[in-house]
Image (cartoon, rainbow, N blue to C red; front, side, top):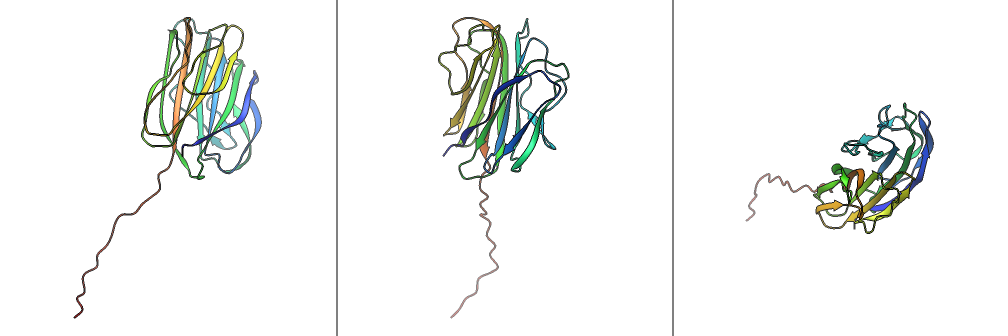
Length: 225
């Protein structure tokens, strides 16, 4: 059975420095995925987000079009957090408008998870995609985010299941997840009929494999007779 998806915190926006909110982690929340979309051509500054004393890890890098970007996106994760209530902090020293969503990956057997792969891409074109990743284990889950300059953010279709599709005026954001039942290559994307600037990031996670000990020690053979 593939890992499960849950929405940890619905999309919201803020301009403070830092952006903070109380966040509860419950048993079974194997990975927190923080999806960030930042308005404008300037990257968010101030460093890595944190949850209490634990620091999120950025997967791939901040992605935006190389020429005249209107928005950028980031994907951060926190693996196997200890259940409890802590403050989630997003540094924002430039006081930019940051849209943030917390997505959750859960293993149905409540096992720890590991990071599998990430990729990112950017361009000015149709059909944003972070590019392909290779998932090496059955039952993984992938998350992806894209941000771009489309004034009407209405992709149709997209590969995964929608987390967000939001038109923010002069630009927009889409995020999605995909439960990969069988290991192999995966490419998430959004389909647009018109060209615009965009950046996109994807990351995947899978349960840690069970440890099976196949080592046997033969002390000797005793003959009875």
